Image 1: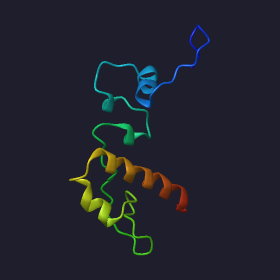
Image 2 (image 1 turned 90 degrees about the vertical axis):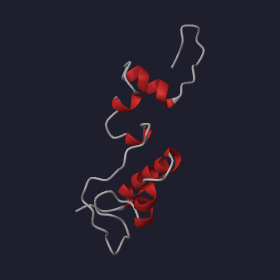
Image 3 (image 1 turned 45 degrees about the vertical axis):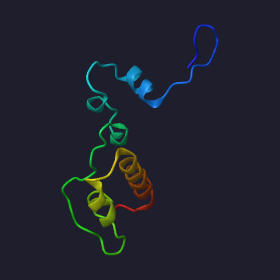
Length: 97
């Protein structure tokens, strides 16, 4: 982003989101679609389609492992964001038919 002086401004992700989605409400209510991992608190990826796939070891609904599912309720936001990153990676690797 260029300021009028020609200097480049460095912005944090949350600041960029505020520019795109200005609000006085908490940020977690106004996030871009598809970016739940940026919310605080980090929401669960569970979509209530709970079935573990024996071949992949992932839940067919949320793409988490059983260990990630069990740990979720006691985990901090950093752990949860890491799980979301793994989910995004898994989405790219899995062939959805």
